[in-house]
Image (cartoon, rainbow, N blue to C red; front, side, top):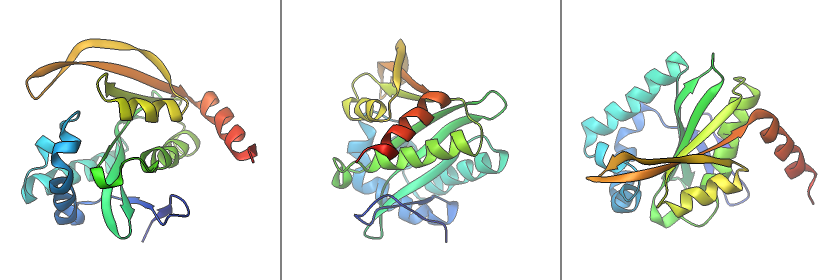
Amino acid sequence: MFAVSLGDDGAELRPLEPWRAEEFLAHMDRGREFVGRHIALADVVTDLASSRSFLQAYADKAAADTGRIHGIWTDGKLVGGVLFRTMDVAQGVAEAGCWLEPSAAGRGLVTRAARVIIDWAVEERGIHRVEWRVSSANEASIAVARRLGMTRDGVLRESFRHRGELQDIEVWSVLAPEWRAAGKARRSSP
């Protein structure tokens, strides 16, 4: 089975496939309120059928080369994930995103996992621009964008309705040459 180590703590990144629907639903149930504060995923995956449907939609995106979804596991338990919500290889643009249940927060898991998928997108798929769209209220996700070396491009004011409230969405991005330069700097640091 495919798994990528995320470091010495045993965390792993694996594809999140439809056959994992029960595990994905249990994970979402554990973190529903925490995850749902800023993103719609918690309101979309509410039962086994919706869990399976959500994961199948990403399996279809993977088959069409228009998106990907990967889970983050610690100690054999699914605790979060990263994804390419959209991916346009012809245009060289992808939108990355993440979620995490509260038990796994503050350990750098999302940053490490996002580095893996962004490296893959830039080096293997030729993506030139990776975007990170985030509610201005989601300080943790904004911190991830900063740690990834992304630049804040701007704010789409009141552009997303979440749980009945209009949210400002910040657009962050990193370009392939910036990503590669930052990777070389990371590898050469002691």
